[in-house]
Length: 200
Ligand SMILES: [Zn+2]
Ligand SMILES: [Zn+2]
Image 1 (cartoon, rainbow, N blue to C red):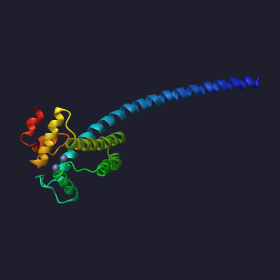
Image 2 (cartoon, rainbow, N blue to C red; image 1 turned 135 degrees about the vertical axis):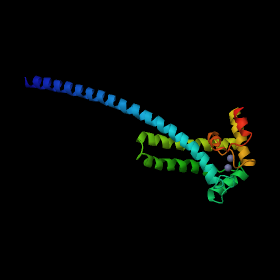
Image 3 (tube, helix red, strand yellow; image 1 turned 90 degrees about the vertical axis):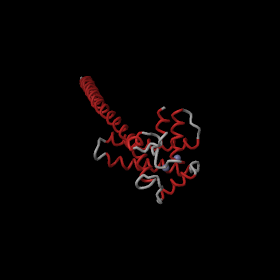
Image 4 (tube, rainbow, N blue to C red; image 1 turned 90 degrees about the horizontal axis):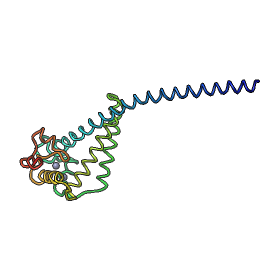
């Protein structure tokens, strides 16, 4: 019967299509599984690289952009140096609008940088690095605000607070890392005393 033949063919054809779809799906999952593992690895590498890059940026910008060109502690007569000079004079003077603009500006710069990084690194690693770098700035900015506006809740927090105040009020050429002491130890700018305090 044409109808049953037609139905049989239709059923066979449907079964075949379903089978092919299953095979395609399985292949797709396998393929995506491989891509996902590779992508996750790239994301992890990018996150570590971006986070480390931020800590170096934090130190370098504070030392060579906001303070003297040779990192001697003098505050440069430039717009950012002027803002930093005002911050040194009055650490608790702050502007929510300026802080929000900082977060947004750095996030936008990171997004633009991600395009360039995609040319020399896998896209997942490039984007992850940009996100981690931007998140590093936000972490620094929030921690820095807390150092000046809130009492420390941990011993480590108190040590970082004391160390940063030492930079503000006694040793402007020292303790230039705010969230990490690592780069100060590498470049020999950890103030005498704060080194012992942070490790005791
Ligand atoms: Zn400060
Ligand atoms: Zn400073």
